[in-house]
Image (cartoon, rainbow, N blue to C red; front, side, top):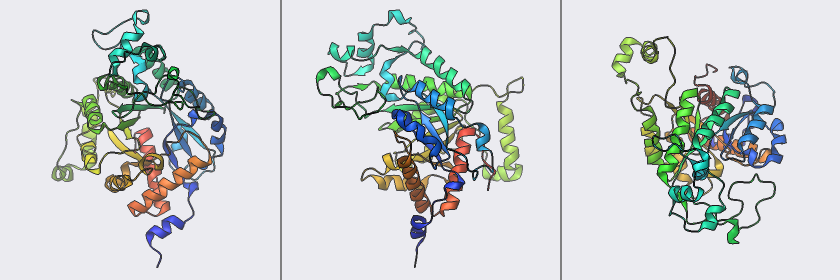
Length: 399
């Protein structure tokens, strides 16, 4: 007798319903961008991470951006080419390249920045090798990064802030001057590891947090969703997010009182309490929607993110590349089971657009449907509703 698992694995994949990649990096392979319109996926959410890819993401968005009308209910089955949603942000792997000129007492003009001293302050252990320091780019002001990111976001009204976050395990690659570099993979956008061996150096966590938090505040100011990277730092990622909404927590109404007053009335009361004197919602210091990309934390940690007092709506995305590339995939399965049905997203997290990206998306969708006990059709529809909620901040009414 065929089981549900057999049905999910053999059933034809319903691309026509709309599949949305919540996190990917095709600008790392610029030559693959021409393949995007011919992909089976409906939308790719393209992340920026560093100086070399911000303009590439902007260019891809200028040419292929999805408008808000693409996410209207009832459009999932239309036969349109794949489009992109851009995300602009600075990844924690490159946070050392930014100097903090916005915190109280740290304002400096660029001409006063001592490159050597800056990197010795934000890299741990503090590097003594001046050749290594000189191989690093000139530091960029955080105020300049935020201003440029804001311009890009204003140009694209549904763009996200991302990829941003914290990483305890990452180490900076060695300088190419060390003679340890391997040939980088042909066609890759410069600026990442580029085949180099890893050094003993990492970015100080306090510095990472400053860059992360500044970008979270920008997302709150512009009412944009964020895509968050968190590796070996699950506790401190949550603490940093929590600091942004401190003092803005929702008042949790008991189930008994909700029944008496009606959930719609309670929600309306909360919205009214947020209104400013002129009747408009003021900017907030926290992002309205948050995606924990390729979530790798234990399922037990989900509870803190799902606390009803949190004013942001938090989603969790999963990928085959990260979550199912090692023996620890059991942890991912348990997390998928524990994530509420309306808070789960899928992603490829791949550096190259095209057939392989489509294949990875199909694979993770099938795996989630199998784990959740969903039919493929129901699962693809649910994931599409979740993505629209994450992106636009409102739940879809599409069945």
